[in-house]
Image 1: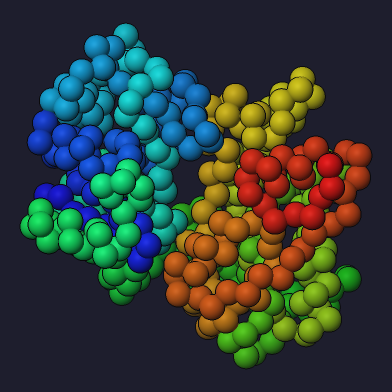
Image 2: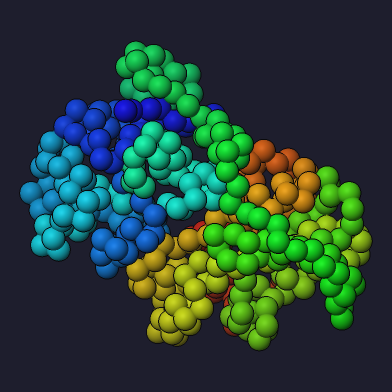
Length: 367
């Protein structure tokens, strides 16, 4: 029950966590960069792993205290996902990297962790998976050609993330269109407000125009403090206004207001706690990590499904975030980026610098 999963560029060896044994763990130790244990956030919390800090904003490195060989690691993984590991039986930091993945799998985020999770589920196993990035003989990430040869040699199934996405889109849908109504606004004209029921909650898309094949699109993360109270600590409210003005000028486009994205996915109260930590000297990424969260918990698969439902094909995406671009491309959209920068000021300059330096946002900010 082992597969090689690829995205056209890189590949990982993956299998259900319940099937971790000495042979399979050893396979990753010999051929991959690291051992990654993928699980949804609710499982990380249920297992108490969120009390440890994320490394590089993404992984929680843990292990058994004796940090043993492949057999010991396999036993640790199996017991961990079953909730049979006690607090004293976990070493931090360790060599098994726990990763937060989306419970909706590739339909929520089209990444290797989610694909590994879906592979396990599609084969009848639960919501945990083990994987590692395949390396070549030089210790670099293996090319797709190299990965194919490895899979053939090992008699291993090879599958693309796109294939998993296509299969799940045929068989499942995470969003349901619930209502469509006319919404006149004070400053930005009249929209069609389309309401969706999703795993993230009720989400509204503001739509202008009938032909939506090639339109400006904004996927906007909800931000009560910035969008409603016009907080100066971020650039969210100004981005929202700029996006709505652009759609109004062109008289066509889509703005999706993403519920569940407050504070890069940690929620309103936790965001306020992060604000407090920033007052004490942490930056916006360090504050999320200090609270026990990844640096960014958002994903854009739900938005992608809404765009598909609306008939959008080519996306002129108003964003500074490369993750949005890459995720939409993974769902088959033709994406052109349209920058949506705002003028920095004293209150948000350090915040914007952190987004550029630590989260890779495409911002033109001078030091």
